[in-house]
Length: 348
Image (cartoon, rainbow, N blue to C red; front, side, top):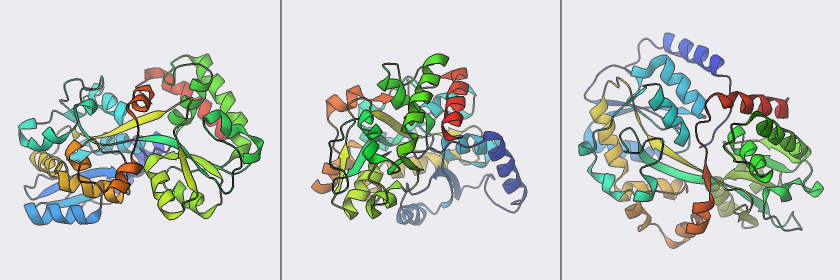
C-alpha cells in the first residue's frame, strides 16, 4: 500500500536515534495489558482502536509507516519492539525468509472464518502460518472528465501531450516500472536487467506529463483540479469521486496492479496473544465494515462486505475477470537493484 521509496540506511539510522531517545517508552516490554502495532497511516479509524481498548482493557501503542521499506527498517532495528505489523504481499515473503516472523496461533483467531478463501494460501505463505489478510487494493487511473477531452483506457494513453505537467502518480517503483514492463510485453515482475532498464527508459518518456509523485494524498490534487489525471490507489480514487463527481476511474487495459496488506507478528513479539486478540477483533464483520466505510480499500472479509451500503459496494467493484488478469508484485531477489537503479535514473 502507499509505498514510497526511501533510503533503507537512512531509515535505519533515523529509527535508531528515535529508539535511543525513547528509553522511557513502554513499547517492547511484555505487558499483558498492552499491544504494540505498526501500521500504515490513514488505514484504521481511531474510534476502533478506542473500542478495542474499552472492550479488552488492552492499551494500544500505535505507530505508523509510509512504506514497506520503513516497516522492514523498524523491524530490523527493534524487532522485539512490536507485536503486530502490516506489510504488503511480497514483503511478507521477505520477512519469512529472514526469519523475522512468528507463526500465528489460529485457534486464537476464530473470526478468520470470515476471510474469503481467495485471499488465502498465497505462494508467499501457502499455509497461512505467518499472515492474515487485512485489506487489498489496486492502482487505477483516475481522471477529471471536465479537464480531459479524450478517452483514457490504459497507461499508454497517459503519454498524450495534452497531459503535459498534469499527472500525479504513486511514488512506487514496482508499480510504475511494472506498468512500463507490461506495456513493453514483459512480465511486471521481470528479473531481467535489460528489460527493467528498458522500462525505466519508457517511464522517462512519461516524465514531462508527471507533475507530482504522491502516494499519500493524491486525491487532493485530483479534487482541486491541479492535475487532470493520475495513477492512484483505488481508495484514493473513490475518496476523490466522493468530493468531486467529475473524477472518473479506469481499470487500465494494459496493466492492473494488485496488492494485499497482511497482519504479521514479528519474531519475539512481547505480547503475541494480545496481537492475536487484536487481529480477531478487526476480523469481526461490524468492525471490518467500519474500516472500509472510512477508507474504501477492498476488503477480504466476506461477512463485512455484506454489511456495506450499496454505494460503497459500487466503489469497490472489480469483476472476477479483472481480478484474475491483475498481477501482484513478488519478491524479485537480487534483481531489486535493477529496479532501484532504473527508478533513480527516472527521478534524477
